[in-house]
Length: 366
Image 1: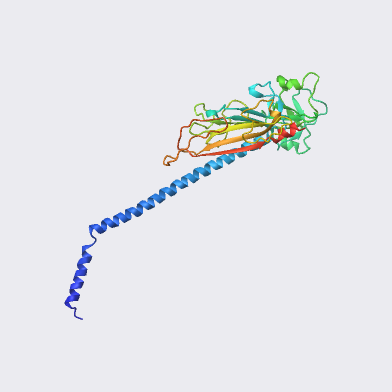
Image 2: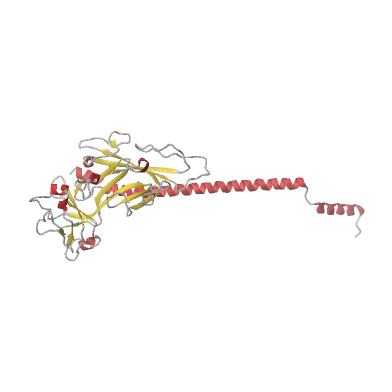
């Protein structure tokens, strides 16, 4: 078929248009649209990354708070179990080994940045056994005896080690408990039913309850002593613990000494630990409501028998500062502690719980 001149001219014009390509204006428009799309995608990506980092920090803080508060709450609920409120023997309030050891000891503002600390005393509920003596043991006795085949005593005593603390309580007294603490001088002899203990008469508080012609009870309920002190470590220059100013750690001391290398880190990034105590004397009708006058920042050994509730607050912060966000948090003011108002880029969460000290309440009502 022969092409007409008109058709040939049309095809030639189309060929020239194809060879010519895009104009500069068309390229500029295309680049602008592409840049806009890329910028929008990048902004979306950055926003999603920030949200992910925020959620990750929130989850980390939430988990740390739950773990720390679970451990603290359990120890507070057990405080006083098997102690009769005051225990005679090693340790003692204020580091005085001749003073009775309270089931709860408070340290108001003794930690870094005004944080509090607390010592909680109880016996291990999983290892409880009863001594059995054929004759009343002397106060200076260095051995306690038990029947290995009764109530799985041998299995329980096999878990105790030399240098651990043994806590025993005498329930015979009407309206009161009397408890004693000894250091184990050797691992228990589970075959012969012998627990070797250090002579308790070197402590004046022990002698005040067991001396002269007095004797220890023939039957006492005993277990491993749990003396746990919780505090914040934020000092990396003393070589003790894993805490620092940028990485404060909630620690647990199990030997009632000054902070030392064998203390256990409990939770990372705990910035503040605050405590308040509700004391209810006999006949009091208070309900320990927040803001009430019954709450105290600290207690004495005389207050322990009337201690009704402990209010514990943890302030946990993120493990690293978020430098790209606009909002800045200052440290929280909790209880009677008002830290520096300087803002920084850390995220923070705060958790408060109230724990009824049930064992002290039970003993107070006997």
